Length: 255
Length: 255
Image (tube, rainbow over all chains, first blue to last red; front, side, top):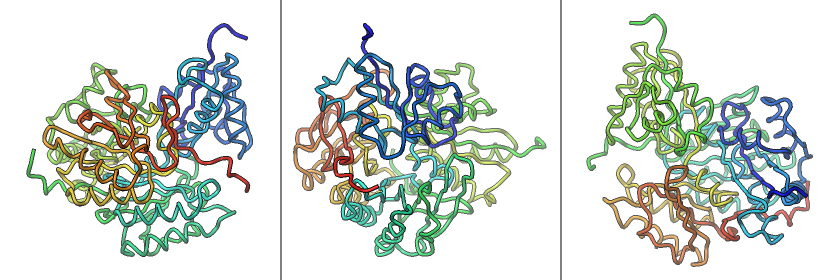
């Protein structure tokens, strides 16, 4: 066993193109003995650092991956666990923390922990669209693998009733081809059909593509696993090829 | 007038420490003839690039700032407009787009436009706390300068009813000392007092400080203009000095 305490960094790689990763994330990767992650994410690392000490894992083995990362960090290694986007938003950070505390970790050293934030897909997609999330917004994933569909419906309903702009993650997959269609039906019950919306496919990745739509005519079958769907709120406007949710500066009279 | 078309980049600088800025943002700043922004944000630029061609503006002149940036980009200059965090979330991107389109811009060249996303305060604060925004969440600002308070209340109510974890921006200022207190009263009507919560002061800036609390005992007077408040949802757990909203991986039975 090494003398020094191990180190565990949970790192958000950003949406894809390494130009959208923060320097702190890059430093955490460079400092690691081993970079552990789902294969698609370790490939995101070797794209800009071909010799990175990556250990690619299959999809779906999140608990095993987190447990192995924690085990090795506790044994004194420097481990980085990577997620795309932000590691704390639909990423590995929560699971790694659960595994650490379940093993009696005291929240400080042995291993030392750092969570490095990243640009989550909603922000990257919003930048491509202009500023659809410019004021208040909600992020909701339609994946019902780990969250019951009733909870997802409740959250979509609340966002719609509360007039929050909406970033929809994981809108559709082969295993649940109807989920975006079901979500749109809920939103259409609360917002007018002309509400601006968009699909952003593969944001910051090869093949990136933006499709503007309205809530009424958005075709759910156009979405895939790698699409981020944006639905505006009552103050979102389509302007040319952009979507803008701006605050009404003209109203401004105070300080 | 220069021959080439002007260029306008709206750039999110991230939460403060330049280590949390993405490389694309850095490149956009380096390529600019002039970096325009509220003084506190141009100082965020000169902190890591002392000779940056910054033009600091006073607070509150957003429309004038956007208009001047657009005017100069249309005259052929390369202009970067900066916001802290993400320029598209409570930042300048929407306003710049509104000014551009109001002047008859066609959405493409003259000037060319790029919105560069950044790590917004909610993500930076969440990383410091662990993973409180690990599943679905909402971001709501309590500033009622440009959004009516009734709209803010409606959004807080919706987030609470929809069991969304919540990131609260601009929780309190000298001009509205009661706003966080009013927001907490709404949330307390919907969520139990033991719901994990936290105040993150000056995230990624000198003096950064985390205060863990519960929804029931969170002291609203501890918040300032530079505090980000997080309130968990029903599945958020306090674990040691962290907050975790994780998906229940144990439930997982499918593919």
